[in-house]
Image (cartoon, rainbow, N blue to C red; front, side, top):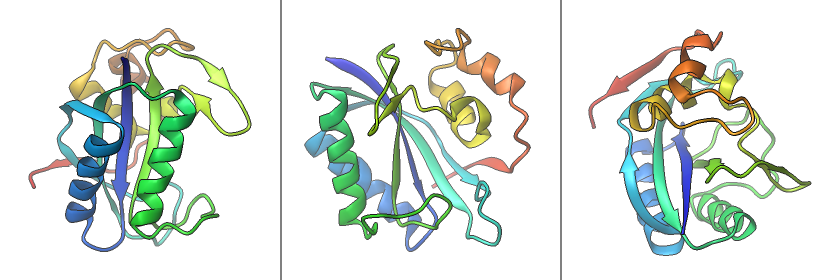
Length: 162
């Protein structure tokens, strides 16, 4: 079983309901959710004028290989209204990013692990540090807490109750 971390996000529609449906779909298709962070209200990163996001990080136990995992994440996004070729920086009903897959480090045309922009995004690091503060980034050799303290992103990331 692989231990993976996924970032869930939504900035369109009923964001809370969409994240709930995403967790249900993940449990059904990908694996058991072991831990989940709080929900965070986050400013849209590099998306001027776009609605704010609700984000959450979850740790999932899965038997899927990284490419099957990517396929199921994309399928869940499409079922919630994602257009096939959504350009970066566009609003979305559901976004699922694979942050970590065990301690795997890989780069291919389809997938880079760990996610290449973790260290630059406060909206990823805050919920990661909440649920896995000592999780070591396999390339940068720093914990999530260390990465959060060194992050230059000053975007709004605020824990909310849902």
